[in-house]
Amino acid sequence: MNADLIQQLIEAGLPGARADVQGDDGVHFEATVVSDAFRGKLPLARHRMVYATLGDRMGGEIHALALRTLTPDEAQARA
Image (cartoon, rainbow, N blue to C red; front, side):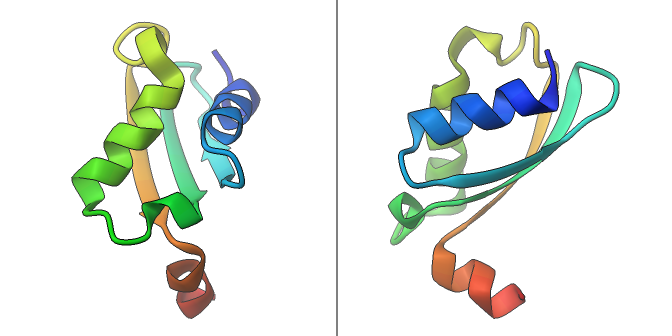
């Protein structure tokens, strides 16, 4: 597994999302995901939405994924 594939899967599963994924060892990754679909959702619900885009890969090919999930407004405020 690699960071580019994870990014592609997240962005395909959450249309309009932007994902930045890092990870050098092939099993531990960090991702910042910005999506309007997160608006009004608590962090746990946001994380579940991202995990759903990865399906069976979570806990298998992807051992760990640290997430930061933001709406576009939240991402803009941090910039």
